[in-house]
Amino acid sequence: MNAFNDLSIVIPVGQGDTAWRPLLEDLVALGEAPEIILSACEKSPSDVEWPGNVKWFQSQQGRGHQLNVGAQEASRKIIWFVHADTRLTPAVNGALKHFIQHGGPGLGYFRLKFATDGPWQTRLNAWAANVRSRYFSLPFGDQGFIVNKTVFEQLNGFDKRVVPGEDLDFVVRLQAAGLPLQQLPADLITSARRYRQYGWLTTTVRHIYLTGLLARQARQRLEQAI
Image (cartoon, rainbow, N blue to C red; front, side):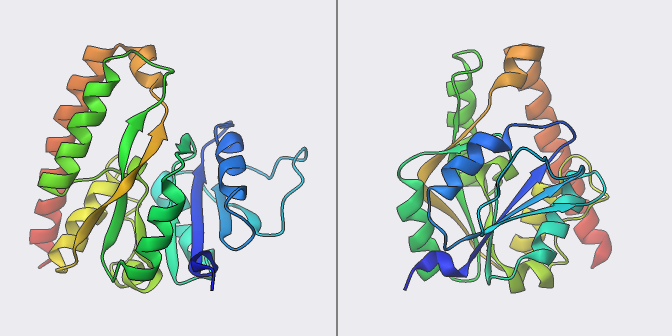
């Protein structure tokens, strides 16, 4: 049996974003088994001939909201959340199948690698992100969260009020529920264009600050809810 028969892939698409097009080519190459859902804040483009396993849903703007809409529409038991500017590496296929078959109820995520569309220093950022996620259990959404749909629903999905930081908020709540995190042995490539656009040092310092701030706020929200 093809493990991808149990998989729905949810991709949030922002206003005017076209990064999902090369990603869709990567995902379609996985075959017809997985369900692919693009959750967008605009109408479906008229110039695309959609494969039978690809669906486009329009909803209001907001990544947390769009992710939740995609998850709600998902018909499979495992959901893989993938950012639109992601590209796959060859090892993703096998790692993804193994997690679907043996991963259990926790959260799976991939190692991060930056594309070559930004400064070379982003290699350091990728290394730091992988250390942070593996040893401090704080992966980001661009590392491709994989989770059982039942678990996702039990945790009430992403909190659309948390902007930015819906990914860290979800991770903190998942850990509080006693569920494990697992880093998978494959890389996802994400765009480094923001580092080029806003400057490597400025963007790096901002991300470090926001990571600490958002993680602390997520834990405070959890403590207040208990």
